[in-house]
Length: 634
View 1 (spheres, rainbow, N blue to C red):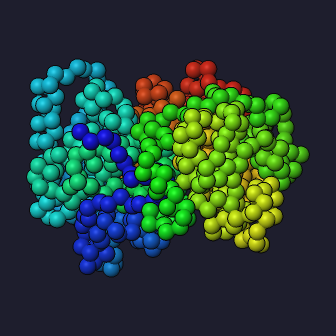
View 2 (tube, helix red, strand yellow):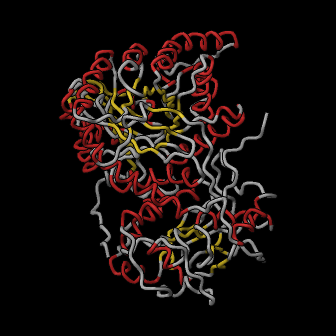
View 3 (spheres, rainbow, N blue to C red):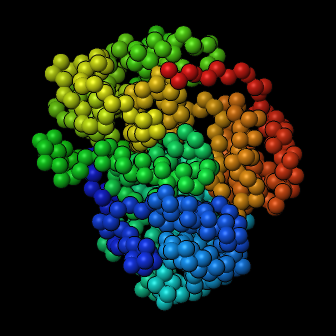
């Protein structure tokens, strides 16, 4: 079997070559996905599927802001049948946007939905299985019998989709795998991939190829590993297994945290050339997701180097990569081993130390007067004061010891992700494992305008932040996405012992952004972590209102992860590694979980938040709220 391989080079961008699939009628707002076609932006409406008027209204609102594919849940056959009315009304309004029916648990609902919509999404973890968290050893004969049972349930949908020229999405989710897969592979990226491949083989057995894959997790690092492994396994299966993929970080949450998690997961993969359609899942009004999708896609060309680059730098990179392996294991996260060194008089980095937050002198001067002893968000070093070797990884260099902190020199004519991966690869070739300081950009002009950095013969552009032309400041929302993609991608590769954010011009905001990126990447925990689904027609309470209520009571809890799930589909399985879960069990009733274990059932919604607090207290995770010092947006 061929070695695992998910992209041609970790340094040079080349979009993955996928087969084209047809979504709807290309003559009437449908499109061809994959191949050389642009990445498609999609979202999901949040209302009851039986409310035809509201479904139409929300769909039209999404289309108005540029959504190209709209997903609607179909939890029952009755809901699936009403898709006919929704689609008919949309057509009557002159809207022919392709619709995706989201199916969980009920094959009969899928067989109804496929009559009316262009795409049907199925989750292999629950399409033909009822999850019981049962532990069972399967013999080969028993496993084969299970696969036959799955085929009996899934093949009718495949046959109908082929006859009606529909598209399917085979979408696995971390934490919602079947007991059969869990017992053979565990709750792992490999289990997610193999679960999807089982369904794909059934489709191919019936000569049906109009489908795409998705591998979603609320943990960006897990999500990145899953998609890389999926693409590698598809390549192993053969050249005609090059199906398109949909990217998304599920249950990303809201606000900055939701955008940062999504940018880390989706942005990292886009920069590696993966992805044919994306969704940014936010616990906010759905149209806001499209704005983030558009902004994120717009950054990718500036954050990656095209494989056909003709510069000498590109030639050097190609020459290096032709003989080099990846500088990290792309299929299993492992933090790069480095020695522990002193960063400042009181702070160490590298080894098993926390990944540290470094700021510029200008940022320090603005935030230092506002710091208090108990603040969790604070600078841990000033860049200009550090003993750091600034290296151009496109040139040959020497490092005399492993305890020297290193970074990429400003002015290097490479995007930051490429430059830092190349730095790590060349250090490895030299037999060195120096701690690395990551930067979100490689020069003042690049930080502010997004253009390639201007070279500085003195080599001290990082020390003189006034070098270069008069800057045009990045909008905060763009600075956030860029910093998250660059630093988050590298952290997910296991690279980095300290980070410096400069693309955000506000001093307090840049400091907070650095910490938020570390938390989203699973590297540090300085505040409560929330896993919140984005709402849909299955949701049994108002997610935005309830999330705000839970945050008001719990946001001071450092190191606690709380999952807020609208229905049983997104919990308990997809809560993954949350400490506590707040899950809709029935209209007006909430179930509370500890991990994946249900503890309290059918709690009236009006009491549920306080009961959640009680549960946190019972498990000794509660501390009294302290006054929080918010950093000013300088």
